[in-house]
Length: 381
Image 1 (tube, rainbow, N blue to C red):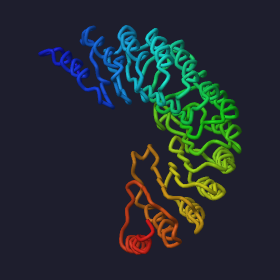
Image 2: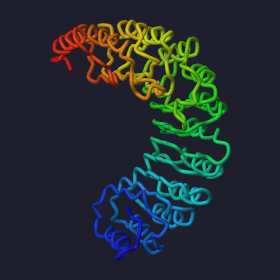
Image 3: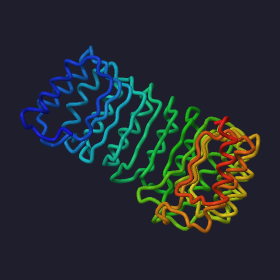
Image 4: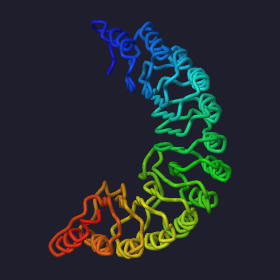
C-alpha cells in the first residue's frame, strides 16, 4: 500500500522503477490521494522508457482520478511492452477514461483489459466500448463490480464489434433487460468469442434466460458459458428457477457443439427441474466442466447426476454449489443422496479430476461406500 509520503518512501519507490528494466509485473492498485504529481510523472516516464519490459500492470486506488489518469496515459501511449492492464478506481469517473482509451489505442499491444470496481459515467463507458474493438490485439475484456452512472446497455455492443475478442466477462454487476437483448444480438454476429461470462439480472431472471437461449442456440464459437450473480447476489433474486426457462436454456446450450464449460451459479435450480436439466446436459457431448447451484441435495439431483455421469461422459470437473440463502450449508436430512450418485459414477470410470460439494455430511455406510468407490477410481484421476 503506497499511502503516504513519510521519509519519501513513495518517491523512492517510483525512482527505483527506472533501475528495474526487466520488471515484468507491477501491482499498485491502492494508491492514495496524497501521492505527489512528480511521483505520478516518474511512473509515466517508466512506462514510456524504451527499455521498459513491463507486461502486466495493475493500477488504481483513490489517487487515480481523472487528472492523474492523464499523466499515466502519456507514458502508456509510448509504451512498447504492456499486454495486460487492470484498472481499479472509484475516483476515475469522467474525462480520464477518454484519455486512457486514446492511449490504449496508440499503444496497440494490449491483449487483456480488466476494469475492477470502477465508477464511470455513461460517456466514459462509451469511450471504453468504442475503443476496445479498435484494439486489434485485445483478446479479453473483464468488468467486475463496475458502477455505470447512466445507461449501460451499450456495454453489450463491444462483443459484436471486437474482432479478436475471445473472452467477455462481467460479474457482480446489475444490468437492464435491454442489455441482454443487445448481447443476444451480438452473440449472433461475433465469430471470435469463446468464453462468455455475464451476470443474471435480479429483476426478471427467467426473461433473461429466454433471451439468451434464443441467441445461444447452435452457437459455433462458444467453448465456455457462465451465468454469475448480479451486484446484490442471489438474496434479491426470485425463487429458484423452475421449469421451462431452465430447460430452454439447457436445450440451447446442448446445441452448441463446441461447449466444454458451463457455470450456472447465478441461478438456483429447483428440486423439481434439476433432474430434467442434468438429463438434457447429456446432449452436450463435449462437456468437461459443470458448475451448478441447486436448491437442495434432492433425489432429482441424484438421479440427474446418475444419468449425466454415464460411462462415456467427458466431465472432468463437477462443482455443486449450495443455495446462498442457506449460507453455504446443507440439511443433514438430504446430505447422503448425492455421494451415492458420485460413487456410482466413479465406478463407471467417469474421468473426474475435480469434485466439489460444499459441506457434505458423510457417515457410516455412506462414507464406506463412497470411500470404496473412490479408492477403485484412484488410478484414473
